[in-house]
Amino acid sequence: MIKINLICVGRLKEKYFAEACKEYEKRLGRYCSLTVIEIGEYRLPQSPSRENIRAALEKEASAIRARIPRGSKVIAMCSEGEKCDSVEFSGIIMSSPVQGFPCLTFLIGGSHGLDEGLKRAADMRLSMSDMTFAHHLARVMLLEQIYRSFKIAEGSGYHK
Image (cartoon, rainbow, N blue to C red; front, top):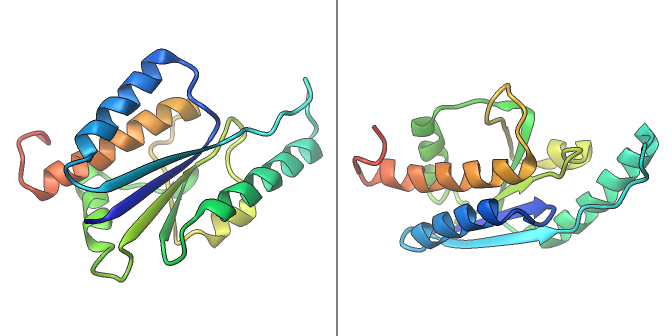
């Protein structure tokens, strides 16, 4: 069974996002071993400078790196990443064990994104859209797409 980790900056505070995530986590239990890890978002001053933001992202990156399992394929979720459709995304997930990656780790940054060095070190950068989404919503969307990937792979009617 493939192992999937989501390392997310920030904690889900909104009940509706938490409930949606729990639903997809429950559904994914049939298909993979899923772990969701929340890293605290570094607190910034009211009007942070670029240097404040860069320093915060570096601290978050350090905490993220400490939680990435060795031998994992790391996919950084970021706006400048590659775009793919759901079928292509399913292929990425399903082919990873064959490529020697029994574990996939997805990284979702906080409100200021992810550290540049962390993104460069990732095995892949992936974008959900040209649109901007709240990072908590991005977590729900990513979990749904991971679930959809397994349904596509099994030939289910879930993906129409």
